[in-house]
Image (tube, rainbow, N blue to C red; front, side, top):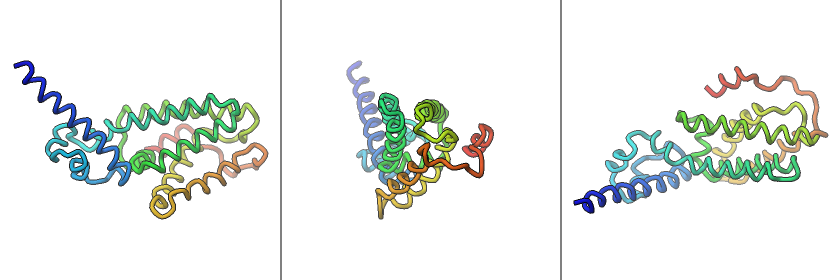
Length: 209
C-alpha cells in the first residue's frame, strides 16, 4: 500500500519538474504572456495537470525564476571578484543584459509587465544592494563618473528592456551597441554635468509602482 501511495507522488513530482522546465523554455522564447497550453504541450501533460500544480500563471513564474536569480548572483560574484573595479562593473552590466537578451520572460519581469511575487521583489532588493556595492567600488577607484547612482541603473533597465524586446528577432545583438555608447558615457573622464539629479528613493519607489 505504501508503495502504491508513493507512486502517484513521484509522478506528480516528475510532472511538476517537467512543467517548470517547459515553462522556462516557453517563457524564455515567447515572454510571460505565452499560452499556458503551449507549456502543457511542451511538458507532455494536460492543461488540467498544469493548473493542478500551478493554479495561477504567477505560481508558475515563481517556480521558474529562482534559477534565473541564481544566474544573476553568479554575475555579481564575478563582478566583485574582478581585480579591476571598472571591468567588474562592466562584467555586471553586460552579464545582466545578456541574460535578459536570451530570456524574454526575464525581460518582461524586469520591465514590470507582470506583478512580482514578494519573494522576487525581495530578490530584486538584494540585487539592488549588490549593485550599490559594485558601483561604489568602481567610483572609489576613480573609474566611474561620481554622479552615477544605483537608481540610474533602474532607468537603464527599463530603457534596455524595450530595446531588447523590440530587436530580439531582427537584430538580437543590437543592445550591445546601445550599451557600449552608454558605458563610454559612464567613464569618469567623460563626465559632464547632468541636467537633473538621480531619482530619489521616493521617486524610485513610485517609478517601480
